Length: 394
Length: 124
Image (cartoon, rainbow over all chains, first blue to last red; front, side):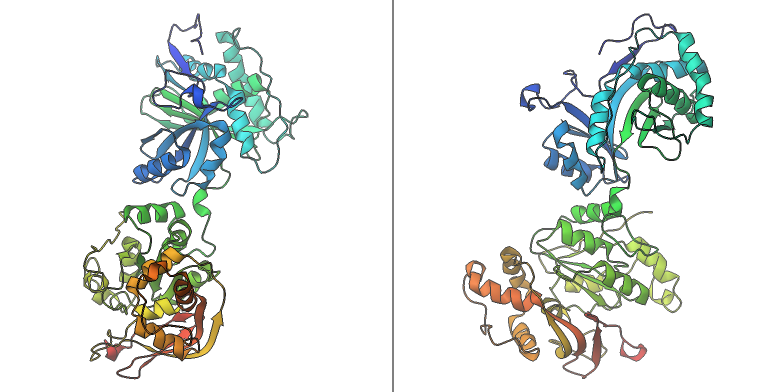
């Protein structure tokens, strides 16, 4: 995409097409490998901090293409027809399709900065991003994306867009556009201490521009599309949210106060390098979140989970239904594990939550001094395998 | 409680018990249901199983007839044997009953398929 010419403020912004057909991006699939009629898209996935490497490896295995990782997220470039496959990733929380990325030079003057942040994206390929978004919707979306050419926008027109924003906010719950355009809202996530504008202002500016440019009606509460404006100092990225509900809610039905997200459970099991045929024990399992994820992602293993707290046992029982899986729940005291010597290959557990709960339970605090002793665990382990206890920091 | 899990459990946590293995099973309700057969999983789990304890357990719930007294050579390639082992290890569930310590006779109740191995104050 060519950079806009005659930019009124004399700043330079270089919109990239977010990987769509930009051969300057490092590491993406060569064009020759794309199927006819398909194109490259970039999907960003949020990941619990600390699990980025696990997520990157899982995504690379699944997508077969290069994945980049940074704090809290990974970005995958793949053919648009394969994007839905990413819903089966176990280590990511939410998916977003990238509309465009840009580096913007900010002058410190609010109006001009807002215009720069917004304007560079009006040339990005919204149609392709929206096509990817449509694939993720549970029911078919009828929508034709006709956009007014942006070459003629002037600064004064952008400013008047900003004025129009307040009118959009007042009518935020109007019914859908008669031409079945999706309604939308903009959420701005901003990192950086020196911006001349607030997140709300940036969201409003982009919202007004998208509404005028694409003709979509704004709805702050009952929206179809969530447009995310991510500003990290002078790096700007616009994405559309693909997952209505976070993927980490997938397994557990009966939650307790310490239930781990499924994505974190997956990460723990990956860190433990569980292999087929192993016996994996969670000695303080709570609602058995780790074992529930384990039997799905590691079907070649046997999981035994144990708890002493009666309500947690009930929840574990519910979560482990149906009982067709290679797993069992036992009621036990983790200080006195009733497991014979050399019967266990790996212990995987959330000890931090378990300890917090136990220490606050009357009658138990005397037994716990700092971390629970690993001695009972060591006895149960095979001599050739190390104890692989997983400790999470809060 | 599957018989594989029973095979791992011991009452040696009780004060004064030396081995506490294998635990006897007194079953009041047993469910048999077909489970997906995964030969690789069964073959690998065999190295964890105390075979004679398994035979005894299967016998006590009335399903021991088919099992050989010891694991055959090249068991991992013997599909017929693996299917029998799969049936006994995974498809038999003790839903209601007791596990009994072989040395003290102490009973650990099983309810809804979950054995309760918590000890009382004096047993620790």
